Length: 134
Image 1 (cartoon, rainbow, N blue to C red):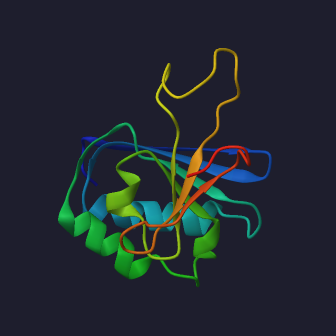
Image 2: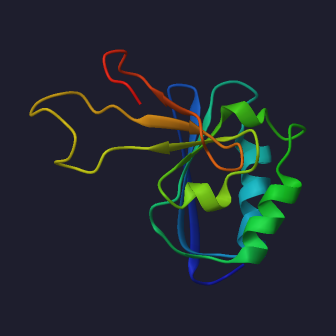
């Protein structure tokens, strides 16, 4: 595995949270797939934080998209957090982008993530706030 890559996991409220850090290549993609298959309990969601990634290599993206499939887990329950999620997310998974601190929020208001389905161009934006149009 790439010495500049680190993966950490935790369980919270029935969901699996994975944090990727460093350089993401094919070996790291395979490690992520094996980690999900080993630790996903069959229920709940899997959240993969991509913010701490330094680089995303094309071979890593190809490996992840070719081998991450519904046999491992339902892709509709796989969420990539952060802008780099658009590069990584296999078809059927989702990308979650939160507002940056201090922008588009009312002071003291709740954090409202935007959930984007990965359908090639990520055209489908859903908001948890019914008063806000996307």
